Image 1 (cartoon, rainbow, N blue to C red):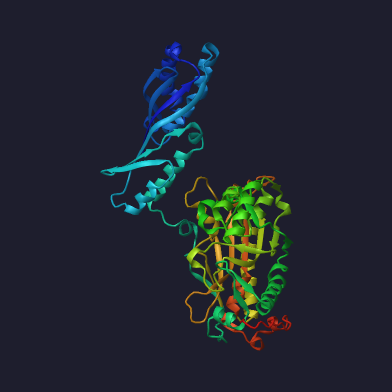
Image 2: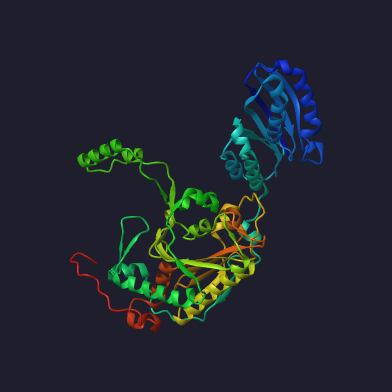
Length: 511
């Protein structure tokens, strides 16, 4: 791994009067300052060429992998200022990199799509392969970008793409993702049709114009509420979770802390607040009135840049609530739950029927505790969910999750994060005639992922972890109907006894 940088240190006045001091400074820097942090000289930075031109020092720095060339350039700023300021009143205005290349060895059989991914990385200008070496040329960089470590992140991403590492989930999970760890006894299904089509035919749902959205009418809503009541009674209350009302409009910086923006930016709905621009909105209203079409371009002019997403995970506010707080081990665990509204995910082409929607209802359990407490609580939520399914005579199975939501943003690791042996369990209700059941329980332990991201600390430095279990009520309803059908007399007593008679209002043209 080699780096070569051509850059400039730009001053507020001509620096030729300090020629001798600068020459001596560079000689010493190559022998000391640019070697610090590297055991071997070949891994450090070295200034190989330099010259003074008017108000600039133009220099070339080469390096190995430890003290990289851009780090070497940044190291020069403070001591140069201390050297030239008091005597010559010369100060540094800025530092720029005009030309920067990075060379690394590559496998001979690297797929073309990997190279295409590297080409698309930010700050990469061009790349070429010479024998077994990949040469990347970066776009010009300023000091701010260097201090933000953008080069190091690009290099890390390149390394990851070249090493063909196994999926992070597979790498950290001490069991095979997808492995079934528990299942119920079989139950004879009472329905063999498509639950979505039957619900539409009966008027239990009506398609809403928005993609992946439905209007749920009284009969299916009553079933939803009955299941919700059972979940609260059988899972949430026995584990002593306390109810909160979580915000659903989540600022982008929170999603960045969660690493969601790195992991699944294409899976969220983004929100824009309107500008204080009455003139634009007056134009918008007039054009709308005259044309009877929504003038989207004018509407865009009146909106700020996206500043929020609508909650895609539902647990986001919990970690922000604890952000930069200190807890005491003796007071743990902290256990909250939220059931106050919808969760939103953009499924793109994946939305279908009532089982995979963009807008859905969940009960979200979240907690903070010691590693032992955290895993014990997660496992108990799964155990009680399985028990409730047995009471409802629903066929189910539980497997090792293959897509813990928080790991998407951790595919390129920057810091040491503690992960549990099994990050996720997923319980699924089987669907008659289908190979894969519908996931109704997603039970996660995050290790220190959110502890680190939100700077949550224990008063005495003890280890603390977080966990969450999402209970998918919308999917639970779908799985229930797929097995038990729509004839309420055939439903199990725990559900039937909780449902009062409801009616669909008579409408001539529907259903």
